[in-house]
Length: 123
Image (cartoon, rainbow, N blue to C red; front, side, top):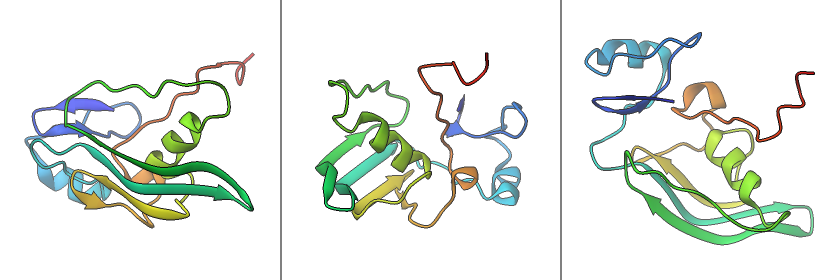
């Protein structure tokens, strides 16, 4: 994610998106963020079959604020981040980015990035 004057914005091939040029955002299908609005999880449930990984999570993160999910292994931190990033859909509830419900939008259409903690993917 890149921080521009209009909020956190995604770029292509590592290039920052100029927030002063909203036409480029619309061309890429990226969600422009409204001032003051960041990420909101509203009654988020994520289930894998009978197993509930995330139960009724609700949080509002203001635009430009740093936020961390802390907890033990298996408590749902990565599952929430994968859902916010668009790699999986919630079982129930809503994910809003920039005030917009992002249900059905793929990872390439969201102003998010997901970096794994363990970089063992590349030996």
